[in-house]
Length: 259
Image: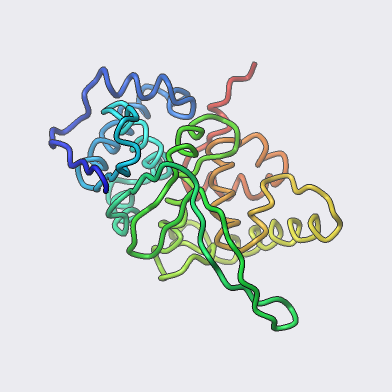
C-alpha cells in the first residue's frame, strides 16, 4: 500500500538536488548561504533517519530526491536555530512521515456546552500523535512552502515539538531556560483571548480561525505563520512574534523581500 524510502547515509545531501529543492521552495530560498548549508546537512540526516511512506495511489506521481529534500528542509526549518542536540531531541518522537493522496476525514465526538455529544466528520490535511506517524496530504504539502501562512508539514511537526513534554498537544512545548513559562503563558493567553473575542463578535481573526479551536492548534497555526507569513503574525500579534523569535532563535521577518 505504501512505497517507503530509507536513503543512503553520506554526511551531506547531493549538492544539485539540495539546490533545486531550495530554489523551488520560497521559505528555503530566502535563507542565507550559511543557513542553507546547515539546513541541508540536517535535512539529509532527517531523511536518512526517518521513514518516508508514499501511498500506492501516488505511485505515478513524481516524488524524487528533490521532493524529499524539500520536505525534509521544511521539517528541519523549525529547529534551524537550535543546537544540534536540541534539534535531534525535538524530533526524537518523529519516526515516519506518511503521505496520502488528498485530505482525509475522521469521525469524532464532541460535547457541547450543554453536555450533549455530537458526532462530526472532520476533514484534515494532516494529523499526528505522540508516537504515531506524521500524516499529511500530498495536495496540501504541494501547496506548502511559500509565504502564504499555510504549511501542513510545519503545522504537524509543531505538534510533535509540542508533545516533547507530554503525550497530548497543549500549546506548551518544552521551553529553553532563557524563556520563562510565565511569559509564554501570558503572550499566548492574550492571543487566545483575542481570537475568541473575534469569533464571538463575528469578526474575521487576523490569522486562521483554526487557531481558536484548541490551545495546541493555536501554537501550531502560529508556527505556520511565524515561518510562512511572519509579517502578518508580527502585525497582528507583535509580542507573539517576538516570543517565537526567542523560542526558535530565528527571525523570519528578515527573510521577506522588502519589495
